[in-house]
Image 1: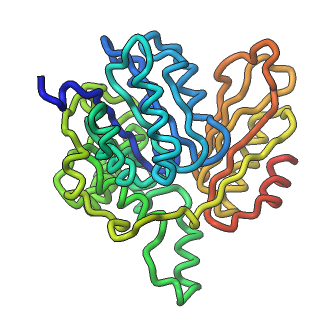
Image 2: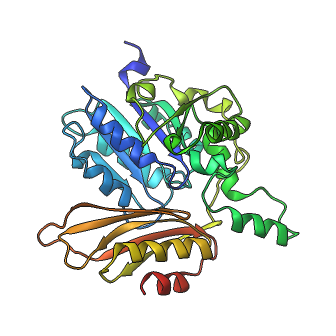
Length: 345
C-alpha cells in the first residue's frame, strides 16, 4: 500500500456564500455508502447554521459527533488554531473515519488550507483527495459571482482611487483556481441559453482544464467528486491565486454580525423584510433559525441576495433555547443598527 493510500482522504468543498455547498454535502451524506465520514464545517460568523443543517440529516455513517463546527473565523486564517486540532480530533475517533469532508466558509481562500496539508504532522496522516468549487449558476448566468454585485460596481465607478480588483471577484477566482472540479448549482432554474452563459463565465476564469458539472437541487452523484485520489497538497504550485505573494491575508472587505430577534408571527413578512434589507444594504447573505409564534417547529431561514428561502426543519426540543438568531454577512461597513431595525420590526 502506498503512503497516499494509507492516509485518510479529505475532500475540500469551497464556494461563495449561498452557492449551495451545504446542500451538496447533505445530499452526499445520504448517498455515500460504505464509508464512515467526518465533516468539518467552517462558518463566517458566530452561529453554526450549516453544521446544524448537516447534523439534522441523521445519517448513520456520519453521526453528530463526527461533525465539527469551526466558527472562530475563516478557516484559511486560523489553520493552526482550528484546523489542525479538528483533524487531530477526527483521527482519534472510534470507529475510524474513512473520509473527511471540509466545507469552507464562503469567504475562505482554499489555497492556505491546502498548504496546511503539507505540514509534516498533517501530511503523514491525511491527504487532499480533491478540491471542489461550488458556484451559483443563477448569479453567473447574469455575469456575477453573487446575487448583489450592484453596490460593488457603483463603488468602483464613484471611487477613482479604487484601482484594485473587486474583492468578491478575487475570492471567486481564487476558489476556482484551486479547484479540481467545479459544480454549477441551480442548473434546473436556468434556460439552456443561461446555462451556457453561466458555464462560459466559469470557463473564462479557469486557469487550467477543469470539468464543470451541472447540479440540480444540489444533487450530484458523490462518485463524481469523492475518491479522486489527487493528493492535491503535492500539486499546490500549479494553482496560482491572487494572494500567492502575500504572507498573510485578512477579510477586511467583509463584516458579519449576529442578530437576535423576537419570535415572529408571519414567516412571509420576515422574508419580505429580509429581501428589503438585501436590496437596500450591502448584504450578501443572511441565515439562521427563527421561532414562529404558536408553532412547535423551528423555522430555518436562508437568503442569498434577493432570494429568500424558509422552511420548518425540525421540532424544538424540550428545554431548547428558542431564541431567534440570524447571521448577517455583507461588505465592510454594513449598517448593523439599520438592518436590526428593519428585521426586528
